[in-house]
Image (cartoon, rainbow, N blue to C red; front, side):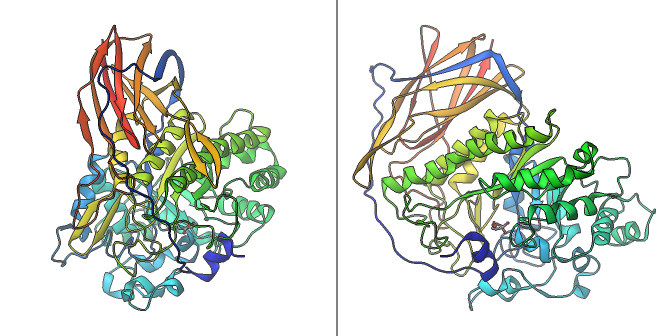
Length: 554
Ligand code: AHR
């Protein structure tokens, strides 16, 4: 039996086996039929402000993510800005990308930031954490890190986009002094320290003012195989003193894998052994959850339990959503554990890795490790997950989809001069108007979906989403998870009236639909006119859809 921790130590392992699902047909059927579903938005039940950082991303130095996905080099014959892929920067600006985590992941705890500064030609080549899982045909820079992208290039990438960098420090294999010096390199004022001079010599005299810092990654596994008590001791040591230069540093503690409640509880117990004031050190507790086990309870094996990215049956569609939906219980559960220690809830949750994880075999660029092809199913999964974060604004301060490009739940795929926005990328576009909005409680009611799960009749909810308001603009997003049934939805606003409304959505007659380098617009946002009936909006949600309603209020 292989679990995720073993996998991450041993490198990637391939697996075979697939199921084919029939394509389904669906034609618009609103006509004059009565609504079967309802969304009620309650303006006098605000839930809190949606942190823009919930719409965050994750970039690891892993296979094709950095080298090929993001970094092309200044001399590349592909449009770039200072060596960074231009089309990627442009779309990330469009979706208002807020924060980007780097350099890992597991890679972070083997990375020495000092290798990635100074003249590019003098930077050392190092063995990448993921080297042993690379195929023989993979480019050399996937196995041996050339350090062409270091702190300067990554922070520059963030600034070009308008996003904040979130850097993860190495706790497994570097001493605490190097963490202090990384902060000093990034944030010390121009002319103040030797490291500020080194930054200036590279063309960056002004401090980067990096605010978000991870203290290790998955410290229960690839980040050091610590017990929660051991990690808590390290956390206290690494966070005891860091230079701040007048700005708050927001430290994110390495948190639990999925439902490991004891990690959260035992970590906090040990940190607080030195007194309740220790809580002040922690801005956020990380939480990682991947939806990977599509075996329907048959195995917990990390390899055997996985499903196919593109070739799947309807039952696999629902199973993935079930696995992803666990996120809401994980947020509530870890929040509950936090409340045992932190009555005022100063410490927030940072879900800095989330997404589906499938078997290898669907890579747009063969030989890219951990790359998979996002389909409409992943768009629905991602919409559902972002709605969960939106519904819990007081608990979730940041979330980072794993990973931005050429990896697991990627928004983009790229290879050399080829670039495509995946259905997941379009979801982030549809949802961007939630950023910074006041979340409002909304009640979603719809008939359950019924389907066959290994000979047993199973059911799944029929409609869920979230709503938020900013100024006079209301955003409602929701997913219809049914692979075959449209929903006709009445939208009732309690405490406001509609002036104008627009709808954008993602769907396709084929639940496996996805965008490739050759066919880039199979799943793209579509628009539809909306009708009003007696002061109520009536909206048709196609089967297997992600919908965003943008409503201008009187
Ligand atoms: O995202 C891929 C890997 O998944 C990350 O490196 C690690 O943190 C997690 O286990």
